[in-house]
Length: 500
Image (cartoon, rainbow, N blue to C red; front, side, top):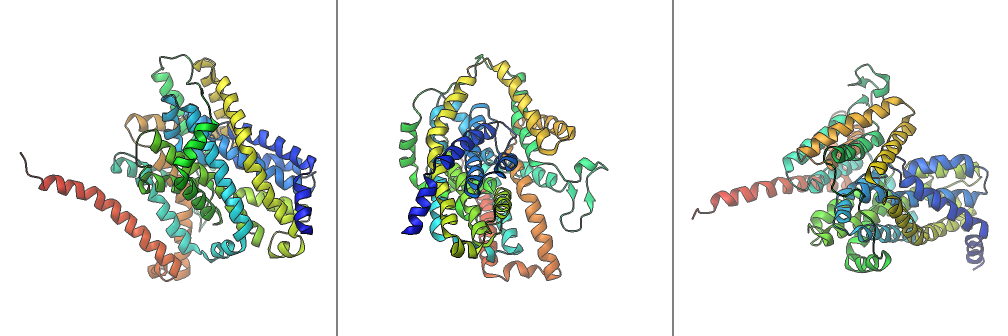
């Protein structure tokens, strides 16, 4: 009881609540700018939080990252330019709803699902962190390999139309992922002698180019009839609550997937979003629909996974001191500097600190709803400006976002190159999503495969020796076999159908 009052007194401290409010506004602004990610928002806070007390310092990063993940949905829906990599999974669905005059409904659905997903992960984090962290630590390179290959299956689910075109896009992404240093031997490959390519193609410049710059090129080539961009009109909260009840199972499923994927070190919110989106698109009756109801189901499922993965990443971070992603790596560094040593002893020596951190998750995700509505309305006013002015400002932010990631003009050239590539791909109805998925998962799959081969000295049976790895392997093979059969079966049925 004494600890409860201690935690409650810290959570209701005026200074802490002010830090959360300011960090929330900062995270929303950063996340809504294409190219500026939640990771960047967290990293830029470090010089400021280093002078704060431990709890407010951690609260600032937790709040800013949660807000930035959601805010990436706003330019994705309104401009078809995802603000963060995690928003790319459902950009087309959200933008389609905006073009049909359902902008408030689309963004409201993502907002309420993001908040609920964050609350789900915070609840799991508070109640079951030690148990889930132990499961995450069981995963070896074998399990991560199968998880990555299973993630590639999402490409067949999110490509929508032609499987062949989806695979073309996927293999393009996987090919791009091979550029740079070999993850095991460290030997440069496909770098064309350029030092800028030794690190490979950065995800952010590629993402900005394929989605944002290609969209600007498409608008320039086929200017829309209306001078202004689609506006956000109508209520946000009430339709969002209706959608939450209608898609409650999909949202809970997305929150659960996001928490589990986030608990795996190195997985991240973008992988969680893609997996949840793919499950909703093919595994849900509503998610398979191509109308607003189906789009809302997919948006809410993936949005819930986005924010839930943030809480999931704190499970191994707080219990064992192992960062679940790059953001928690920053948080762990700040905690060490402030004299807080994350790990099992933290629950014994400073339980009020760890449960205060858990409480901050609840506050941040509850604050996301009113602050997110204000952010959506604010961007709605900005987008009432003529499209030509908005496009020029967006292009400027795209260039700044790409440059700020690597601090080189080479990255600016990359967004132009991939912008042209994205324009050509979409002109030929080749989906962009599988290419991004291949670029994200390619390095993880290659590294885990090579590491496993080195451990087994080339014996492929190691991929089925471990129980969890064998289960994941069988599921992956079954998924791919099912995809092939679904493509062959309709053709055979069509041939066997009598004519006339």
